[in-house]
Length: 196
Image (cartoon, rainbow, N blue to C red; front, side):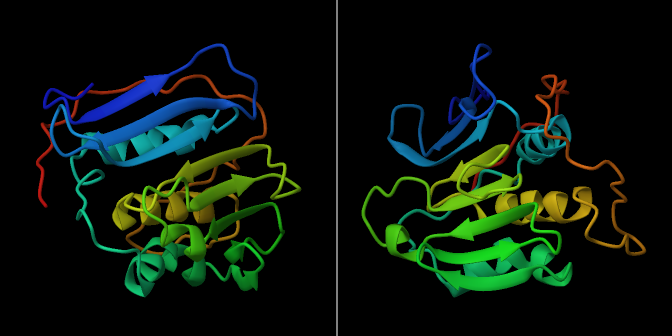
């Protein structure tokens, strides 16, 4: 739990590879309902989890605007790294999907679910041979900050080997493995600031 008691991370150690092992939830106040949440399955690779935790520790990953519907700008911001990496963008019966050139990873956005009050997860970030039964997956609720989703998208685009490193950008050479990762070490970051 963050010192402000408005960001909570739960890790369930005894899970199967495709079951939820990580849950991150952000709250407006320590006693309010959740503003947003995301989950990660047990097989989510350590570099992806480390990227998520680093983003949260920087304090930029959990600011959100309450009550604003998910719009085109949010979707564009969240998926820009995938577009830049040349991922294929398609409309499906479930919404919009971005798929890596090798078909082994993707991001799915469900716009119909996003319009419902108290929507469950509307974002799915996945890797594996079949998006309906991924090797690992991260799901996120409607108000998950687009900056956090963009950071995860960039990590996914880099680490699946589909994006060429660009000057001034991080160079990730590790391919996201299908095996279960060790839990990443969490380093202390500066206190997070909040904005509405």
